[in-house]
Length: 160
Image 1 (cartoon, rainbow, N blue to C red):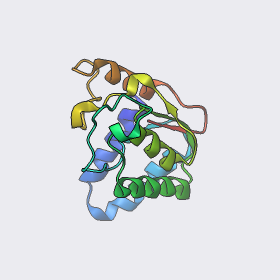
Image 2: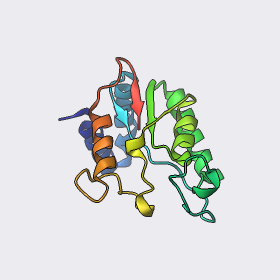
Image 3: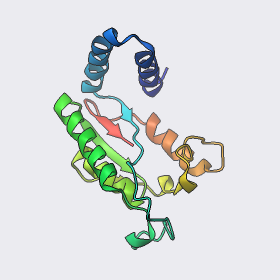
Image 4: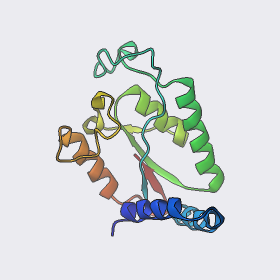
């Protein structure tokens, strides 16, 4: 079983447990993440509903892309602070080339990110657009799978 499948399984089991057992299992998950070797997948935070992806792939024109809302930025900052406070080491950070993904990656990690062309797809508003490597968005789906299957450097976790 891959490490990602293990983490997802742990999270599903965690969500099905009675509340009194959360603390012990969350501690085990955090302990595993502190050891590194995982790829943690995040989707960008909330975006500004008043903006539309007019020309999202015109990467030098931010006005043509939907941007993170302040709520989306705050959530990314909070998640990044929580990872840091818990001592979860972050290695490489891979994002799509869209500004909302790049900004989320930087806010989560506090470092520069590596935008990947193959991950760059606006998904037409679908949160699962990049989850199916054989579907409509096969190129991005395969890129996500490749990044998730690539082991991080020892002692670190990669973000995608």
